Image 1: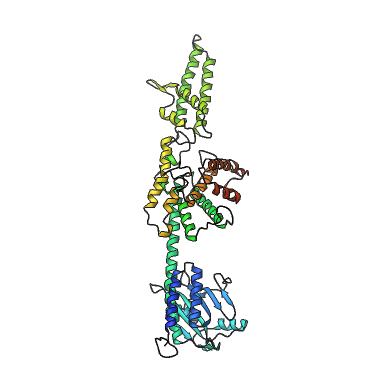
Image 2 (image 1 turned 90 degrees about the horizontal axis):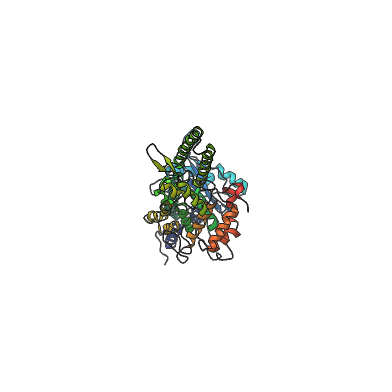
Amino acid sequence: MEEKTEQNGDSINADHVRRLTRIGVALSAEKDIDRLLEKILTEARIITGADGGTLYLMSENEKELLFAFVQNESLGVNMGGSGDKMTWPPIPLAGPDGRPNHANVSAHAALTGEPITIDDVYDAPGFNFEGPRAFDRASGYRSRSMLVVPMRDHAGNIIGVLQLLNATDPATQAILPFSAAAQELAWSLASQAAVALTNNRLIAELENLLDAFIQTIAIAIDEKSPYTGGHVRRVADLTMRIARKINEAAAGPFAAIRFSDDELRELRMAAWLHDVGKITTPEHIVDKATKLEKVYDRIEDVKMRFELLKREYQLAIDMARSHPDGRSAEEVEREIAALDEEYRFLAQVNSAAEDLGEDAVARIERIARRTWKSATHALPLLTEDEIYNLCIRHGTLNDEERSIVNNHAAVTRKMLARLPFPRKLKRIADYASAHHEKLDGGGYPLGLGERDLPLQARIIALADIFEALTAKDRPYKRGKTLGEALRIMAGMVEEKHIDADLYGLFIKEGIYLDYAREELAPQQIDV
């Protein structure tokens, strides 16, 4: 015998209860907000036998009801979400005079928080149904019975309204008033839907907050240095370009790989956080634009000494002219010219525009043997620390400074590993901190090899390298052209520093060129 909660025809039977339970589970499991809203309206229509329905959402300023979804089975109407675009204007909760809009039945339900049942909208005193009448005239439809149920969140706030139209007898297709059971079912479903919608929104808001917070941190790190602004954003952008192309691959080494939405989100966050460890890197090292720069560029100290030494020679010229038995003035002038040339050489070396060769190092050492006279005694023209820094072979950082910079990857791992990321984001620390690892095991901070490096970390590494090579905002080097950057990266593939399959995709899909057209100077695009 069928189990019932009531004994009359308007009772809720056990099938309804089981269906409500299944609907609740389904609503709780739905993550996509549009699919969730559509499912709420569809299930409400099915469980109450309604031919049509509208789902409204409260606007952010709580002054309007926004049309989210509209369905009508008889007319084949499905608007909102994946259906036809929603173009209907919102329902104001107050009139032009500021008085509450109780004439509109949905606005009334939102304002009072009470459900409304109407047997025939053409005979419903107190409400203005000109809208449904106009719709009926245009479509040939006949709107009759209506059930309007407000949706409340856990705090009691109205977050939406569920409006159902024309309860239909499944056997005769006759339009009936909504029964007491239908009202109770709709009320129960509206409560479940409100909980599911609130949870969905809360999760989305928390995820958006986390995204925004992460990007804010990344921007702050970039802003520490006027020379690296935008680096993290560009690396994150490149990372996601590569990931999307992997997801689109129908053939080749990535044909069987598909990143889920959660995995893409995890990867994007890892890319945004890959340099978070630089928050501990001293600014004078991050910003070191020349080899002699500390708090200021010490090439000025060198220049001053050269000028003092030239003054000594100038005095020697004066002496030579007044005492012909010494060095000639011409000899001393040649020495001054040599000093000028040596300083120009050191200034060029200091700028790190080119890599330093053995001949240049030997010349620096010869210059360093010069002395100049202070007020009391002779001093070396270059200090030991200046010689050490001027002899840096590549870039502007000496070994100790480079070690400090490299430590940012270990700091990144240490910082991120302490954060309680949710399960679906649990590998952010692994991906973010491994962007300087190499397939041959020669990278840092952990010296991971090919077997240990996940694809996501390889993607960020490739993006980081390409951005660094082509960046046009570094003071210590010019941004390389596409041709130069790609030749260097091809060599890194040969040396097993970066992933060959990823690099192949990077080239084949033209990712490098799409990026270059948006981010690089026109003269850099030579491919």
